[in-house]
Length: 269
Image (cartoon, rainbow, N blue to C red):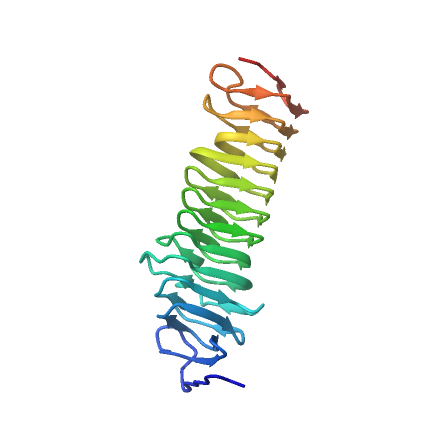
């Protein structure tokens, strides 16, 4: 039996004009148009949404938004899902497509966010831009005008795909973990100090890292590290490794450089 049903009709289905367009069923609010979420709780899209400017604004902590496999489509401006640069905590976004905004998911000011199984495609700037201590898992960023996926400090980016983004495919601030991702046609950039880059594949792009770099594969690109980087078990194919494999760098195993200018064997210190 439905414990509560609230229907608010008459919204214009355009961001900036609609106050609320939702149906609340069994404690989960079904969103059918653009709106600002002002209370903690669970929300789910009930249909595809078209928007002008910002679409769904998260204005509360501990919000879970399930896109339900639907698409949020913009007009080339604004932000698909955003905290409007006000710090929020515990936001979760999952399972849908966000396209044709300035930024798809913009939670830059928020902390401890989770974004999972979301596709950000053809946005003019970044696909995902998420704040510190966040988890981005199983996402796809494709054909975005700048970065595909960006995580704040101490975030984790895993099991995601970044294809043909114009700037870095995946980038992260210091202290991040970037593991088991695929990047095609752009860079994986973990140049912030203290990051871990492990078991990623980058094709026709570079890995730039300052931290621990383990068991990655670069095809048709370069791996750029520095004297603070712990490098081991990586393969660079038809390219070259630029970096220091001596001094403060600790390397074990062999860095394989196939068809490149120079191979770097392990050096123990």
